[in-house]
Image (tube, rainbow, N blue to C red; front, side, top):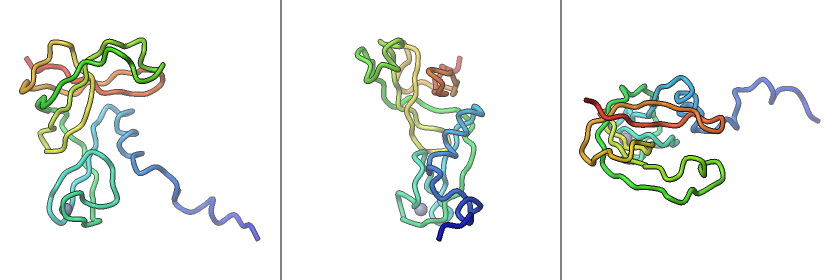
Length: 133
Ligand SMILES: [Zn+2]
């Protein structure tokens, strides 16, 4: 027999990444930090990547970061991104520790200090890292 109880429980099918994507909508980078070993990670997981503990707490990052890698995408992976190509993607290391990917100006340099910015594209909020002058 089907009852209404599932409708009132805390959304069990909410994506694990919802905290992160809702943060982007609010122009905040969120990351998880492990209570057991203090390891920080940006890709939402059920357990710590380093020690496997499941006590993960969400935090807001400052947005300050250092560029660790850079690549130019000249052929967009999907129609959504064709209008942006060619574009530059960077992997940055947040001051809080975790790494993540975002857009950046073509002349950004590896090792450069950057601050997170946000822009909307095709209904999604994406990251763009701007150099700190
Ligand atoms: Zn841990």
